[in-house]
Amino acid sequence: MYKQVVLVRQDLKLSPGKLAAQCGHGFVEAFLKADEKTKKRWLQEGGKKVVLKVSDEKELKNFYKEAQLQHIPCALITDAGHTELAPGTVTVLGLGPESEEKLDKLTGNLKML
Image 1 (cartoon, rainbow, N blue to C red):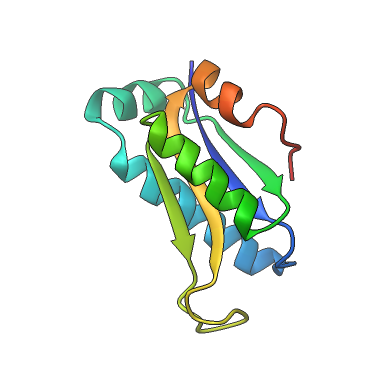
Image 2: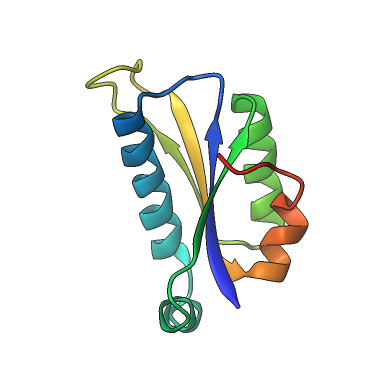
């Protein structure tokens, strides 16, 4: 089974709309970085998505570095600064699609949002 995961910084206290938009960016950008075979399989399996929380930018970037080392499709999302955040604020990390097993090894200890 395949899934996608988005990690959200809790220290930003994003409004519900901003949170949804940033998660959307994370899911899409990470998806675009996956290989075609993985994308197709994930879509055929129903496109499972999970949103998890991290404490701050430092923790988010640590997961980003580890995902890169493990060759997991990933995208670190920064805000354009048009609404409630300063331009360039790192908000979320999109991961996958990738096997649930591989993503769970990386993010399995995090709590759902």
